[in-house]
Amino acid sequence: MKHIYQQNDLSHPTFVLLHGTGGNERDLIPLAQIIDEKASYLGVLGEVRENGMPRFFRRLADGVFDEEDLVFQTNTLHEFLIDFFFENNIDINKVVLLGYSNGANMAQSLMLHFPKVYRYVMLHHPMNVKKDMAFQEDKQAHVFIGAGLYDPLCQKEESDLLKERLVDASINVTLHFEPIGHQLTQQELIAATAWYQKTLL
Ligand code: MLT
Image (cartoon, rainbow, N blue to C red; front, side):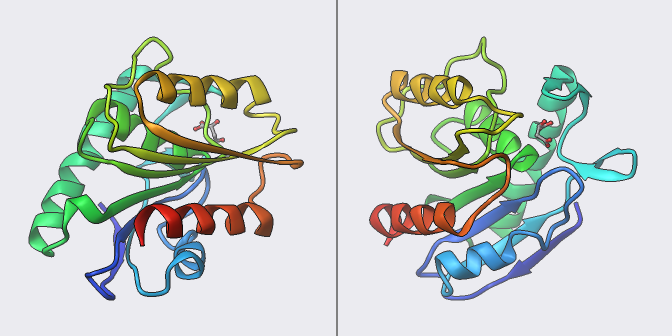
């Protein structure tokens, strides 16, 4: 998979950066650098194209996912990541998935399908993927959700539901709302950084 990797201080976490629809492997690097300048990062480019726009899995319409492709792409990305961590001596216990929008949905899918592997997950403006599938109980998993109160792609109830699904699995979750839509703001980034420092440093 096309990617960009920057190794920094390996005693700090390594971010896996998963962009939104139409983005690329470099989009979230500035975020990672603001959150922790000593962290390493691996930005990955989604392999699906929708009218030329990169994504991590196909969708049939806005918010309607191609479930078969979601599972296939989740497995493919997981295999790529596991090999990459091994080859680069990256401690999986210090990996943080950081996704925005479609990338946040993929991060959530990785967590759903590979429980106890991805334990630190930052979801910026996610939806609910695989609502029929429960997260596996894991008291050692930590999730930050950044959401917009007026996000047309993810209503407040959807964010509340995602939190509930995680809490049901005893996963530690912080849900942070901003009075905004689908975009990422400085305020959300400040809240995400505070969560990261409390949870990982
Ligand atoms: C998705 O398809 O994952 C969501 O609709 C978010 C997005 O627009 O990428």
